Amino acid sequence: MFDKKTYRIDSNIGFHNLFLIIIAAVVPLLMLWPVDARAQLIKLKTAPVATGDQFLVQPSVNVGMGGLSIALDDTLADSFVNPAKAGRLGGTRVYMNPAFYKVTDGNGAVKTLSVGGLTSGNHWFGGVGIAIQEMSRPHTSSNRLRDQSTNNNYFWMQAGRALNKSQTLGARLHWAGLGAMSGVDMLYPRSRRIDQDGYMMDLRLGLDGETGTGARYEALALFTRTDMTHEVIYSYSRNNGCMIEPWMCNSIMIPELQPSNVEENMDKTNTWGLHFGYDQPVQESNWNWGSILTLNYKTHPKIPNYELMNIPRDPGNTWSFNAGLGASNTSDDNVTFGIDFIIEPIWSNTWVEAQNDIWNQEETEVLVRKGEKTIENDFEFINSVIKTGVGWQGTHALLEAGILAKTYRYDLKQKDYVEDTYREQEESWTEWTFSLAAGAIFRDITIQYTTLITTGTGQPGTASTGGWTMNAANAFSMGGEFIFAPDGELALESAKVFTHQLTVTLPL
Image (cartoon, rainbow, N blue to C red; front, side, top):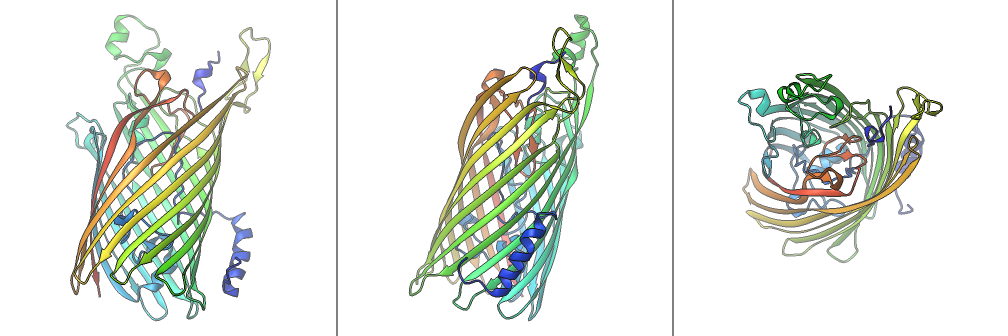
């Protein structure tokens, strides 16, 4: 018999003619060909899960200034976001980038060592790099090594060519072999162990150009695929809602109990998209302004069967956009100030399909036929991001400070076609990241230390659970992304994320 609790779902600005031709050609093709826009990562979250900076595996100059990017060049990070921008470097740079972050209250930690290099000649440019990462599991009391930590490995390579004196074209492949994704363990709070395995692949094609007035523009097309498997091991049976140890269940003779339970869940997400950017200096001043526009389209072929639910998860899809403006000023004393503002409207739809015909209690009428939707969730987000920072660079030293604030706001509309019910839920919260950086500059080497503190996240649950259990029956995750339909108002046991990064760059 159907129980509704079983089904919780989860320019006109004078661009070069060639640039306009490429845009006109690429946009229609992207309707048919898989491409993703990660120039600006549009994160999807319906709960403030503390995930840390797992994918902070490549260096950035502006990370200490709140990650400013719209109207302020980042000579390192820009080359990884859009491979065509590596043509701006002019020479060779080798980097080493160790990083460490920890979530408070024993909710996991990550150590990463990344090395690589970028080179640019008269016509051709490119780069290659690798990263090795150890992820400590949260709340582990086991002495077995595989229960305490797991490993992720990252590899990237890119290449590009100058089309003419003002335009470059670049392509990039980024591959991550993942033994775990940060934050997933919080979605199975009653499990004894979660064994994750899978990969993330990111393909990018970018264009970078300059107009005769000194303005710069970019276009980027990408495709990203995440394919993960979660093998969840429980030390108790979940039949009939029994959430106690096996020996206790046997002693009170509850039927159909198992001494252990192993579940295998698939998590698959594909992302298509486009990103466009433009910036130019303000005449006769030290100011620079810029703008961005990004489109993401995500499909979720398989959403995991998260905690307490023992039914297959069904598809969903998401349209997400962002539009942003930025400004920066660099004084004659080498003091730089900048601010970015981004607005993110997002529409996401998830649902559950009936595995068999669902009848009413009298078994006289079919409420939902096999393959039809039993529950449907519509999310409407209006997220916003503000970044601001200040930095100073002298002959032998640099200092940076910044703040990033991202506010998540969404309205959930849920329809239950079996119970013939409808409900709405609104949620909002803000995640804050405070950053500081200091560095030493020598003739042949630059060393920069950056620390980040993130607040406003933690271990979320819903008020109806009476505890901190994540009712994530309809969630998907991808690099710090979680979207699910909570069954009640959100509650939060707060946690902070502390990140430390050391970047060493050697120009050749």
